Length: 124
Image (cartoon, rainbow, N blue to C red; front, top):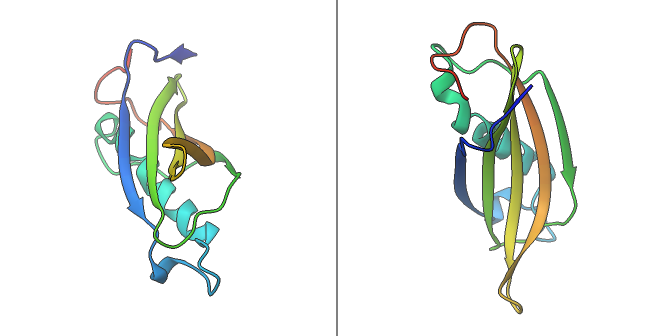
């Protein structure tokens, strides 16, 4: 397995929690966040596929905190591993804590994408 410490392929996306994606109590629906991070997970690896990025083969998703209406979330996607069979992308979603000017983690996820064909360029 090849780790990618020297090649930091990372994407940061902002996501505002609106009334459209919350329940009646103002909390973000977890499935909405999952759908969004599935899409963002493809961003750091698009250049490695000649055609469309294939479907996710495995994932681990842990939501540790909730997000509320009007929260501004940062979705960070980073390519962390490549081997001859798959690419692994780590996702971390954070939101700013208003009182302490720090970031708190909302969820973490790890997605695996298959390498059915040779990538356009070698990652390492």
